[in-house]
Every structure is written in C-alpha cells, then in structure tokens.
Image 1 (cartoon, rainbow, N blue to C red):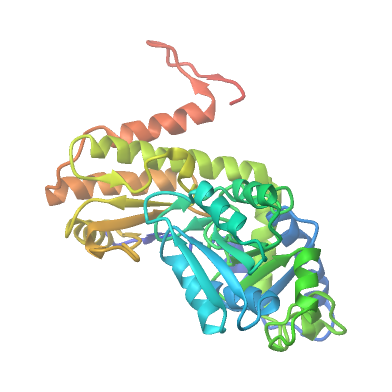
Image 2 (image 1 turned 30 degrees about the vertical axis):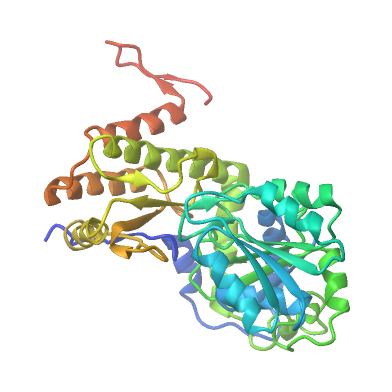
Length: 409
C-alpha cells in the first residue's frame, strides 16, 4: 500500500511530536527530590510565561485541557456565582458544561459555528449587568472544532468601555505558540493551555497563567480543592507542591526541549511560520472550492486560526476523504468534531512542529484523494499553495531567468 512508511498526523492535536522532544523524554527516571529535575523546572516557568507574553504567575497541572478548565474555574468562581460564556464552537460549550458541573450559573451567548464573537452584543450584556453579577467571562480564543479565532483584545476593550469588573479568562489550548497571543497587553486575567498542540509535547500537562487580579479573586474564595488550588503551586514550600505530588518527570523533559525549540526560533518567527502555512492551506482550499462543494468554515481570513482549519465538503465526503487519506496516503485529518452531520466536515491541523514540506505534502495528498474519489474540485490548488510559500520565502524569479534573487521577506 502507498500508506506504508511513516504516517503523518494532521489533526488539530495531539500535534506532531519533534524527535528532539521524544529523545529528551527517552531516558531513565530522575530523582524527584533534588538535582537536575528541580533545577530544570525552575527554567521552565519563566519560559512558559514568555510564551504567553505575561510577567505574572503560571501553574502546571498533570491534566489535559479539560483539567486546566476546571483548575482555572475552581480558583476564581464558587457555586452560585455567574459566568458569561462566549461560544463559537464545541469547546466554548464544553467549558460552560465544566462550570455547570461545579455549581456555577452559566449565561451563554452562542454565536454559532461560522463566525466570531459579536462584541456589540457582549457590550450590551455587560452594560446591563449593573450589579456585577457576572464574575468571569469565559472566552475560547481559537475553538478547535470550528477554527474560529476570536478578538480577545477587542473583548477586553469592551469590558473596559463598560467598566465591568469581571475576570477575562481565555482558553488558548488550540492556539498558544501558533496564533499571536499577548496575555498582559490584551488584558487577560486567566489563560489556559495544554501541552499537546503548539507546545509540541505529548498530552498530559495543563497550564494556567493568572495575574494579580485573579490571585485576589482566589484569596476571596471560601474553599478551593487541594489539588486544583494554584496558590501552593506557584509559591511552594517544597518542590512537590508544584504538582501536588510526584512531578510529571518525563513530560517536563519533553517540555523543556520544546520550549528550547521555540526560544531558538523566536516566538515572533513561530507565529509568522504558522501564519504563512495557514495561508497556504487556505489558498488550496479556495481553489478546490471554485470547482466543487469544498468550502472553508470561516469566511473572513482575519477570523481564521493559524493552527487549525475547519472545512465543509458535504456528507459523506468528509469521512470518505479522511478514510482514503489515512488508508492510501498515510495522512490523518481531523474529524468533523461537534458538527452535524459530522461526515460533511473535516479539519486540518497545522500547528506546532510543522514546516512547508509537511503542509504541502498534506495538501498534495488531499488533491490526490479528491481525484481518486471523484469529488468535484477546482484545479491548481497545490500550485496556489506553493505560490504562497514561494512569496513568503522572499525569493523572486524573473520570467525566463532561472537565477534566484534572495532578499528579506
């Protein structure tokens, strides 16, 4: 079969694990009481703050993203408190369900699955909340199910304009290390992420960054679960309190390697790489859609994530294409998560450890799959994607001239 060889996972998390990360984890267990593990953890914390662009606190949990949701909520809202959830996909609703499970009253604005927050509607809601009933706003920056990227800075501006004192909580699980995010500059009080996407480390670590306003809210809580309490994690009396028990040793070694890779490339360059590769994916999809049913879920490029692209193609062709790619080409695309009918959709993950040849390989394989399955599509999609890459590289070739002029892009 043509799929024999190394498979490629193009789902929106877990993302491709770099060999450097896997090699860092492939080692004997360390001493968890003294020595290199403790010294290394001390270097991880400031680098996690740098990736989120904050000077404030960060707590590490042995948990997935859902655990980070619960950790963040447990520290700042109590049963009976009210939160406002802004949903643009499955994961906004998932965070709302987590809050409800903690006894929190949830008010949800559902903006559908194809467009970003309507900030005018949010402003109306906050202006009407004269008594400050809403304690926190839960906003997913990029919803993995839809690929929608929301305006977090604009949301903070609306909160400031209305004088509302709620905490602004941002889910960056799908986007951290992929889409530009500025926690402090954008006025975010609590940020949530996990290890398995832009941070290029296997699933198992959840992160919560919080500022002094959020810390003050924690101090007013009547009680917080011992495990989720972030206070001892960021001000531990002993190393074990960073994790409320045994450290996630090998995940930490992998995370250290991943953070080194981000530092060496430079976070601005990481963001740029993701932006270019996303535009290549969109260019191919636009061409395919000119001659068939394929359509990008988000019409406005400014509202599309640079980490994941959600695509509509019609039932059952979403599943047909995914199955062909996995069985014949060795490429796995993401399912139509949270969509109905699910087999009308698929998602392309282009996050973390990805480069031009990886993304172009996915797109060429998709092009072959559309042809093999007889799914109507426009011609020239791969050429459109390669043009995006060529232009971004800063290389130009005059007609009839095969020399290359290199200049800064």
